[in-house]
Length: 368
Image (cartoon, rainbow, N blue to C red; front, top):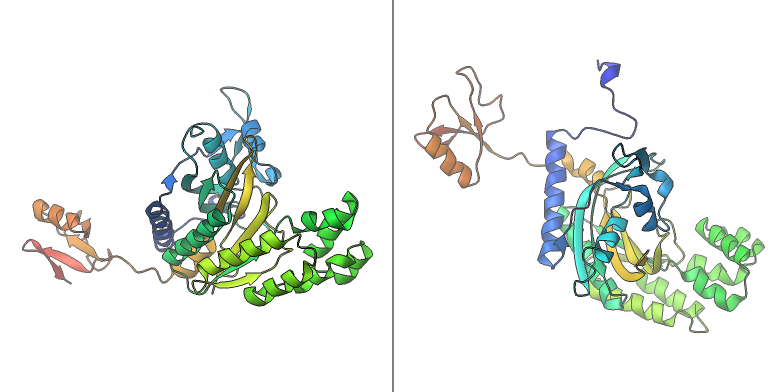
């Protein structure tokens, strides 16, 4: 029985060896993909001044951040709940003079004050990439392609990408003559997929959007049919080009009015899923870096649920048992070849109990 003094706070957990190995492998695989595509890794601090972080977090739920006072400066500090604003700060300050487009990637832990019903976890691993200085279809396509490749490297099967247009309502409302209050109401009813509520809010013209979702090819045709005035023509063409670039690498769907998780994205957003994982594994899209107002496109993966799925099946590495008085030069040579060694501390140490598959014998690895 666990001593109550050893219990962890709600939403936090220990990663035990098998699960930790899966998390480490996933992080390494994703970062290798990003590095291979020319994205340079940066490592922002876990804690920053609250004021600085809030400046870059327009549209992000700042109330989710843990806050406390810095004993040195007596200024308020905040524990990051999202690394994306930190990448924006780095791009706008330390790397402001670097040529654009600027390609950056990152990996690190983020924390939030409370979880939610679908995901009660309060600490997450966040992996991602940001392409700073470009707001083109080509940039968006590169990011979607990169997100798919990164998730494929992490191991899940059956990847799906759901496209959305976060500024869709605002764009259409400019031609519909709606007041700001009506726009807010239309957004709310579209979010809840409530046709009756949408009509009551004065958004009858937006009703077809509720049915312009589903498999990409069918949904994009329905969206194009709705756009009789050509207001969305450039966005629709952009979606077609992005889809063409990644066709066959993932299942593609479209929900043009979906806004959950896209509070700061501009014209394009996407959510990425995988078979067997109950929640979304990541999101991305186009946005403006708050403060510098520079265009950027990026994605973030949150692979904790994937770790839960693959952790139990994570293959155990073979280990080489080194008996007391073993040949240290031979052990060093085998480690250089990739072996993982476990050295006995006494003659009573048992190779099988320690999880070893081989034993150092006559300078070589012999199966147990």
